[in-house]
Amino acid sequence: MKGKLLTKSITINRYNLLLGCVLVMIIISCELYYLHRTELQLKVLNSTSISFYFRLFFEIVVVFILSLLPYSNYFSIRENEMYTDVFEKEFIKDIDVIIADNLSNVDFQVTDIEHSLGLSRPVLLQKIKLAKGTTLVNYIKYKRIEKAKFLLVSTTNNISEIAYKVGYTDPKYFSKTFKKQEKKSPSQYRKLFFKTEEVQNEILSGLILKK
Image 1: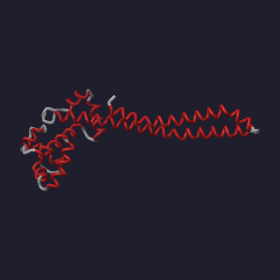
Image 2 (image 1 turned 135 degrees about the vertical axis):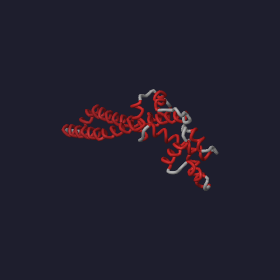
Image 3 (image 1 turned 180 degrees about the vertical axis):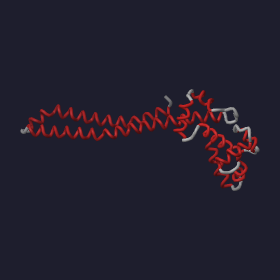
Image 4 (image 1 turned 60 degrees about the horizontal axis):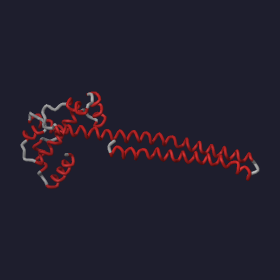
């Protein structure tokens, strides 16, 4: 088990551990009361009162335990959500690495990711749809354009060279795809970057983080 996943598991299970401790304490209390009830009966003349208080105590314990059950379900749901979140992040991280290694590969296809991850296409497409809300093809396009944005502001390569570096053989189609995503052409994007120092720093810091 990976370190991060183990940490998550320990964090999650502490809720169930806490609930278990509470239940054990209640059970022990009941046992102690039962063991010492004879002594209490000797001190109290009215044995009916003992029975009454014992039943009352038992009912309170039952009500308390029942009140904890919804929280047990809540922790179970949260545990599933946290595990799902961890595995989704690992899944996207693996895909991002594969895409980054193949950005300049014009023949890069969905089947390459299938083979690398060992997943069938239906499962792969469903997982990316749930994680990113888009198709895998569109996600690959998005990552290509993000890389192109970085190259536009960090190199002096022309548009055609950048298009080829991110897997496009047709600069016109690259520009069309870029504009569809960014609402401006590659040239306009580059000009905007160098327009002011403030905009330049803002865009560059964001792109470096996404690299």
